[in-house]
Image 1 (cartoon, rainbow, N blue to C red):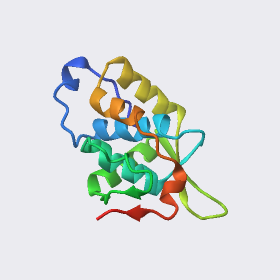
Image 2: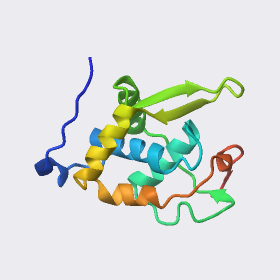
Image 3: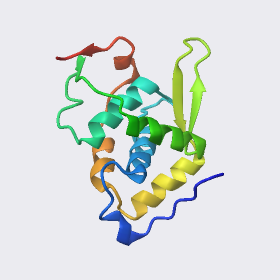
Image 4: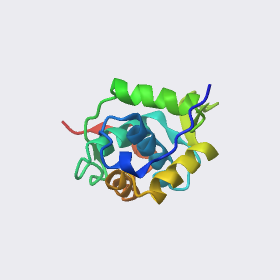
Length: 145
């Protein structure tokens, strides 16, 4: 079974922040706009970006040394499972480190393009486009209290 998503403009203005469509847009957007030169993103980096983006947290990426505390909630987990099971993302295991890495699939890219064409979730996507945080910041993170 697969989910096909068609965006209708009359639903986009009223979509709640915790909706699956919003979460899919943030997950796909992070994997497209926040990778830098990498082809995949670590689970820890994606969870950090997701948590700060869903709340549009100001200055979450301003420090070059420390990270703000963050949470992995059930809505994120459900959205990640839905994104993977419907082939919007691909979960990979790094052979050397045994870490989970995540990449955007063609289907996820098509969904994100549709979202951007309709100017849906623009605040979140603009926020994601501003994020410049390297993967190595998540290898041994220093978390502010």
